[in-house]
Image 1: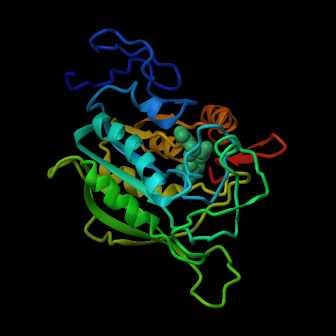
Image 2 (image 1 turned 90 degrees about the horizontal axis):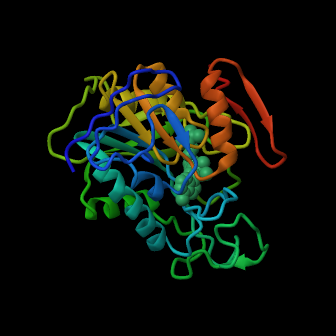
Length: 304
Ligand SMILES: C[S@@+](CC[C@H](N)C(=O)[O-])C[C@H]1O[C@@H](n2cnc3c(N)ncnc32)[C@H](O)[C@@H]1O
């Protein structure tokens, strides 16, 4: 397929761009919208080499149940988890322009041995909790730090990505942990990948590999990353007017920051409740919104 560029005629949420793909595939995602799909199914509809930058945070391994069938993150072993993400990111590699960059925020998980209270196989991906103790990773004993960010980094390297940087997001105020036999975790990773040796970038000289940033509190979605983290990535990896992709959009932080920085966005998440809220939130960006679904309560974009 030929290199593809979106042409936006009307911005805001109304897109009437020309689709100069062969085959005139009207199902491809439109600029400045959010869709509700499995990440890989969403990505296959995006043309080759069409996105300037990816800023995303996939579901972490065995930490949260997002309550939707087909969710990633509740696999039985780290290897299965990385394999699944590698398939998603292979599609992401295809849609990224050769001069593009990809930033992946990812945290680690401790093995729970046979003590993890997680869903059993029949419930995995449906959001149901069995309450049955489940061996999260039988080969990795309880309390083992699983090294998920490193496994993911190596897995994506093996599938063609060039790992350019392992940035540490140092959380100024870490989540409290009741542990006395190891240090409290106060960091996550932002893995920076490129598709080629040479790429578009605008990295300030003063920027180092440890970023000290506050966490954000977004009710109902404990996994939102701070807008400033996204801002740094977008400024480093996407020219003005370019397109930023997030196939695991959650509360839509990537979209909001991209829009505010004069970039276009392509957003997707599997959870329809989040998608609905992001749609509403992006139309009324500066009005704090509280939406209560019982289980999920979000206050989108309260940082303004
Ligand atoms: C770590 S959160 C992203 C948070 C986001 N960066 C933010 O700032 O709000 C991961 C998201 O992936 C979504 N997700 C889980 N499995 C998915 C799948 N198979 N395809 C697409 N999205 C999925 C979850 O619903 C969740 O919102």
